[in-house]
Length: 142
Ligand code: ACO
Ligand code: ZN
Image (cartoon, rainbow, N blue to C red; front, side):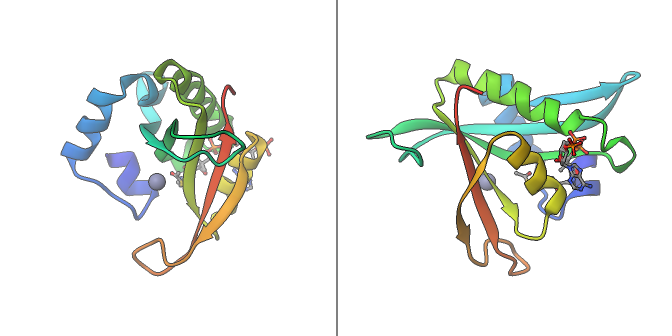
């Protein structure tokens, strides 16, 4: 929660963090350096319509939030958190992975593109301050 509040304007209650951790422990991961937590990713598996050529209702892994402390960025931690979370989404039978990201968030957009995500659409006024989001998604398995 400290990293979330330090790194992002979208913050959540402790109930919200614990609920995601209890329901989807395999995709709630932290990165540690010398025993100190320096990054996290938390996800939720949802059911919905596919973004890529499948039919019917599928399970999709939703990356709710990811952040790495500023002094630990640029070392592959965000990439590894995403990769491990996507591998574990398959254990929950997810067929796709998706997320929302601010259209101005170049580091995060680049990270997701490097991981094979495509921009599916723009969600206008997604954020509290009025900024638009890209909905980005990719097929699983990673
Ligand atoms: N500028 C441009 N591209 C970048 C940058 C940057 N400053 N940082 C990372 N990237 C991209 C690059 O493509 C990079 O690959 P490369 O090194 O081959 O060029 C790729 O991301 C992987 O970089 P990592 O070192 O793994 O990323 P890092 O550990 O620094 O974490 C993160 C990236 C999580 C986006 C970090 O910058 C952060 O915590 N930002 C603030 C919080 C945030 O914006 N979170 C995402 C919000 S959206 C959501 O949660 C669904
Ligand atoms: Zn979301």
